[in-house]
Each structure stands twice: as C-alpha cells, then as structure tokens.
Image (tube, rainbow, N blue to C red):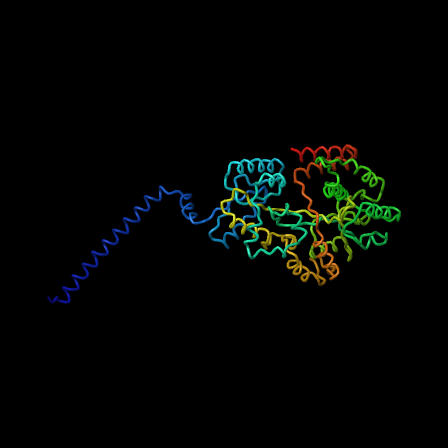
Length: 454
C-alpha cells in the first residue's frame, strides 16, 4: 500500500503525539507516587540506607576536644570510603573530673555488657587494671600481620616501656620527655654540673647551693615552676617510695624539700612567669614537656640566651639513670571490637597523622629520626620572628643532644589526670602557706594510696 506523503505525515504525527502523551502520563504518575512516598520517608532512613555498605567503628574517648577535632576523623573517612567513625554518646565534650568519671563508669558498663566498642582513648583509665581484666585486645598479632608496621622505626626504649611482658595493648599518639630547661649561660658561672641529662638529688642540690653562695640575683624557679617541680619529683620517683605491699610512703621526701626551703634562691619572690622574672633576676630552670628543634629555638628566644640545656627531674634512686617521659592520647582496641583489622588501621593512622592541629611536629609520632630531621633542617639557620628579634639557630651538637635524649627515654610516668589534680591542689595549699610541708606530704600520700587501691 502506498500512502500519500501528506496523509502519511499526518498518520506519523498522530502516532508520535499519542506516544508522547502516554510517556508524559507515566512520568507524572511516577513523580506523584514518589511525592506521596517521600512524606513517609525520614531523613534518618535515607542516611541509614546510604550507610548500609559502611563499617561503623565505635570510638570511646574522654577527650573534651574529640568532637571539635572531627576533621581528623572526616579526613580518615575520606581516605576510607567504607568506614564510618562514630563516637559513643558518653564521649566527653566538656572538661572536668566528673566528666571523666562518668566516662569511665559508662565505659566499664558497656565493656561488661559486651556492647561493640572498637577503639578507646585510654588516657584517663587505670591501664594496669584494664589489662589485667582482659578488656583490651593484644596488638602483637595485628602488628605482625601489618607489613607496613616496622618496629625498628619506633624508639626502642619507649616501646619497651609500654610493653606488658611480651605483649602490647595500646599505642600513644605522643611522647613527652619530662624536662627542665636550663639557662646555660647563667648557670655556667656557678659551675653547675649539667653535663648529664639524668641528675641525682645530691648533684641538683649542690648546684642550688652554689647559686646561693654566689650572691648573684638569680633564681631557680618561678612560683608555678616550683609547684610543678614538687609534682614531678613525686611522679618520677613514685616507684622509689612504693613498698612491696603496694603502698606509697612519702616521708623520706620531707628532708629533701626542707633543704629547698632553707635556700633563698630557689623561688623567685615575685615572678609568676618567666617574662616578669627577667625584670628582677634570671630564672635558671623552666619546666617543660616535649623537646624538638622548634621548641629549642623558641626557648632560646624566651630565655634570652643562645645556650639552652635540659635535665630530667632529680632521680632519687641510685639503681639506674632515669630519663622519664609521659604519653598523651594512648589508644587501645577493645576486646569487644567487631572489626579488629579495620580498627588497627584507624589506631595507626591516629598516632601518625600529620595535620595542622598538631603543634609538636616531633612528639606526635613515635618515629625515630624522620620527623626530627625535617624539623632540624627547617630551623638550622637563623630566623626572625614577627618582632624582628634574632632567633638563635639550632646547632648540630644541640640536634644530636635531642636525638640522644629521645634514644635514652626509659621510664614511663603514668598518673591519671584526676590524681595529678588532687596532688597539685595539696601542693598549692603548701606553697600558699595554708598547710605545712608535713601536712602536704601526708595528704598527698593518703590520696595516692586511696586512689591506687580503690
């Protein structure tokens, strides 16, 4: 059959119009149906559908900054699209002893109930007791299975200090040597013996006596620094004062502190910080946590000297040289974890991540030389700060001293934030003249024993 072109064109146009009409009706039906369905779909339902293919890693942390540091977790989630990091509902968002205690209580209940918890920030809990109760997963197998994890890349004595027998149960994000920075230019005139970073009490007190005899207008501590000195003296030597029964007896510390009381050059009488103390007289020691070329450069500027050395708090034990350090943000994998391998990767990321929020470029890793090398070479030439004051360079000798210090770190000092706060309260009462030294020592001893034997 032949069709006239006009007639045929008309037939085709009519059929197209019919098809388009049917198609539009179908689309309208779909849109209308979806609109009706959307009123019954919650946003949370949509999110849950999107999260179906992701692994949820549950993290418990008492760190009040945890929620503010969400970009760390977000960055990890961007690198691992199959991971969703979730904080427990009791993860801290405020400071305070009550907040930490609430965290510990809820953490214990969740672990005992078998609830899924994958990663724990263990900075506020009693590590010995949790390990004894098998609340943490041993990390040895995960370390051995991870070919990227090389034990030789980490400070050996630090790793030895955090080991329990032959087992590892946690890894810290940062390590901080407990130090006193020494103004070497001011102290060398008094023949101070500061050649060794580990110093005995006798050497320490002999140095103070030399300062007293000199008659110069120099002081060892500011007021606040003296309070932290007493705190560190107790913390670093706590094992020395602990009996075989597990109780602490601090009475032998009283004669040593009384020796300091006699010396007029121990505490600057007016200064509350190093800047104001410089107006009346040089302060020789300043407490600090952490050391790298950047910190050493800043110290030189603040102490107005080109020569800064450092020593550990006096060691009251003659059995070994102590190079004490503390750790921050230690992470453990909970025994209730549903995803041990994935949690190990997150743990490893958290202790090695490089982000702008990390202020101490050395201490945020346990790595040996790689991080420090970069910091040394970025500070090995004279630089100027915003006030155009000369910043003394870090010399090769000073750099080697820093490396030696980190290689020598051998004594992990662990004390909970709650206990440290209680001890400092008693020390301040003593330095303020509210209680006597004997009363302070007795109160500190009681608080330590009560806390350790709860």
